[in-house]
Image (tube, rainbow, N blue to C red; front, side):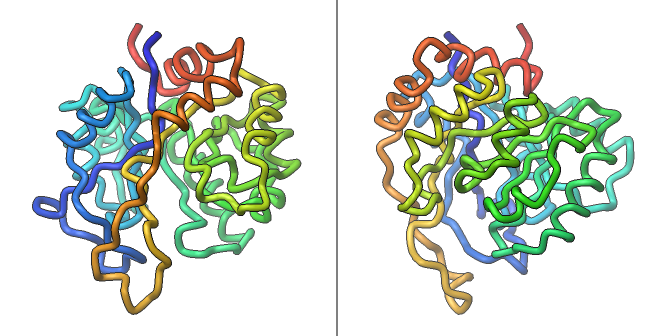
Amino acid sequence: MRICDCHVHVFDPDHYPWAADRVYTPGAATVADLRAFHASLGVRRTVLVQPSPYGADNRCLLEALPVLGARGVAVLGGHETDEELADWHRAGVRGVRVNVASSGGADVAAARRSLTQAAERVAGLGWHVQLFAGPAVIAALDLTAVPVPVVIDHYGLGPSRSLLRAVETGAAYVKLSAPYRLSRSVDVAALARTLIAANPRRVVWGSDWPHTGGRPRRAEARFSVEPFRQEDDARTLDLVREWAGEHERLVLDTNPATLYDFPA
């Protein structure tokens, strides 16, 4: 089985500068570090996701993709030409991210507008839109009306009927990733099993390595390096296998291969 980690980041501040308006500053997490991490888990396929400290400067991600043989999820800056997007596709990009949650956003109208604009921009490329938003925003969106597949980050940060309906109908995938980002009141195991039961062909797994958010974030500390969280990723992957049961291969191999267009 070719296990795919569908949500990791690479941070290389020595070569790629941070966005001036970032909300946090991570430490370094290089391509070499990522390779060692995945080797320890037996992961054979990788999806890099553009992290918010780089804003819409995708250079770190784009240059890492061919080195890793990975797929990527980039962020649109609104100025990309068709030729540039074609270059991204050749590099391995297969989706774009709409990040509502990192900035603390709960503006449903803005989220709907960003989601619609991103979907329209990438529909011709056969890409998807990845949405990072909380349950209140997701519940207010009709994900089944989006003209491209939607991929929901981090369990949707909690249960919502809109998320469940979108997974059931096949309109959205959901990532079983970063359970530590959910409220402590959420039963993660029950939520994972519910999503898998709703449609096992619309669930994937991601580690969220290198686990940002290792301390409470304060605006005055956003330019000081925050530590990464210490997580038992092997244990988390074992739990996903347990929750998936007979659908383990779908969740860890088949679904990511389809969603991210990995070569056979």
